[in-house]
Image (cartoon, rainbow, N blue to C red; front, side):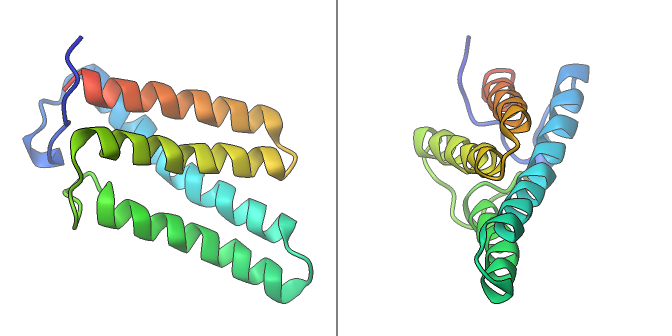
Length: 125
């Protein structure tokens, strides 16, 4: 098994597995934002805090993703190991947010799918 950076989207070799994983990865990225939004609106005490968390958490996650993890080429590329670790931490945040909002099973499924997607992304090239 070879571990390597997937590379920019335009330069990837799009096998059926890569296409399926690309779709899964995109769905997980959207799911991450939805999970953080859901958690924020369910967690906060009072309307202003709920709005702040429900909007702020997804914006923060999208900012981190865009700066360091974007598939088209991040603004600030990281070395391979920190990139993988950060991607797993960001996805784990979404899974934990679902768990904290009372959606434990959904959080486990989300986390498992994210783990599979990251493994495939970095091992299939």
